Length: 521
Ligand code: ADP
Ligand code: ZN
Image (cartoon, helix red, strand yellow):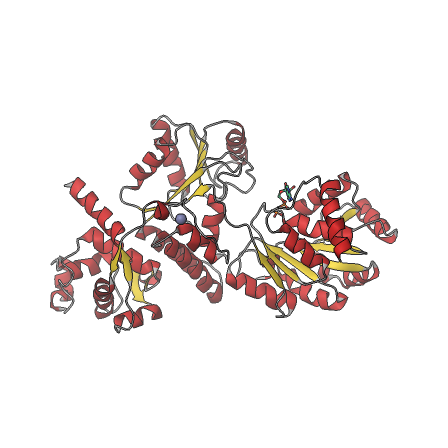
């Protein structure tokens, strides 16, 4: 075992040309070499492939690598061959000749790594082959593809668990998706519920500054952020194609060089935007989430979200495009009640099965929790992924910790307004009730006679909006899209309503609204 570890250390330099392991790699390599079942959760670009390639070279026999990405498999095979490692792939991308060569090489015992596409597992011949070639380790890349409620579900991944048992060899699963639900499903489906040695490292990107702001005057907030970073490369993410175009125009009017990018554009135009962004300095791309997959630009200095992303995972992935070179990078995420409504609607109106929708709401709630966090954002973010850090000092909340107050009373008033009106109204009308504003709608419904009418006069409209937003963030209420965004109370709100739990609200998001009101006067 120690021999193998020493060998691994040597091969790291000799074959891969690296002077040292990265954070987390050595532990995973050692566990795999020790014959343990392993689940390694590492962020994209964290160096997962080394964690199975290196052990493959130290072990006898063949390591079978299962990956859903054909292009990536072919790249890895090419790179391994280039440094003299016997590797081949069996995918639908192969020519007949290539496949023949792979079989021959297997016959000759010349391959250390065999990459196969999951579809191959449906073929009984594959299992026989894998047995015959002395498979000693199964490595599963993108292991979250086994999760039925995730976004990348690949039915053939469900066959991997059986394959592991059939071959009776250790399995090492790798993923960058770290939410607890995906993790549980990986353990259930790949390891039959027996906990593998689990490693989670390297999610922190300490050079990226994290900041959120509620939308007060979003255009101005965004322009200020960008003006302070003039001449730097950055990405603005928007939730609609239309907005990408209008924002890019607005930025150009402010003297920035800016392009828009979305999936509705011609392929050539998209290519051009990508190439220009890659090559030019100081270019801003205003884009939908369609932008970023193939972008490998190390010196993106900032990422701004003009609208709230759809989940904690998307947020992490999108801000993670900044500062790949390790130099300081800034991010700003703007969010408002409309964003929450839009995101909820997108989930509810989607075609996903109910369990998946529930999970998607949960991922959105986690992000809202981050937006309305009361202390270090980095801790909240990393804790969601299961990673712990001591201090951060590089987020807006560390820079100026927000003041909180006991908001139980305000929240109970709001909840009672929701309930007394039969969970049929959105924020606007509920706020009118709370503030005691007699509108036509109030009169028509007889809502002046509600006991909640006028009990919340101490807050203005903007302040109540902030309270409702924080309530959504805590998942106490949810807008029902089938009923025009009428708020429904969730189970979570019951203990607060009953006086069994109290709740803290951030004072600053409420005060900021105040400043705006006084400015607008
Ligand atoms: P992913 O985790 O996304 O699969 P890769 O395995 O492709 O990441 O690795 C990302 C990059 O990091 C690659 O360019 C790889 O060569 C590099 N890399 C991996 N391990 C090390 C290391 N120990 N030292 C230096 N670079 C490394
Ligand atoms: Zn912090």
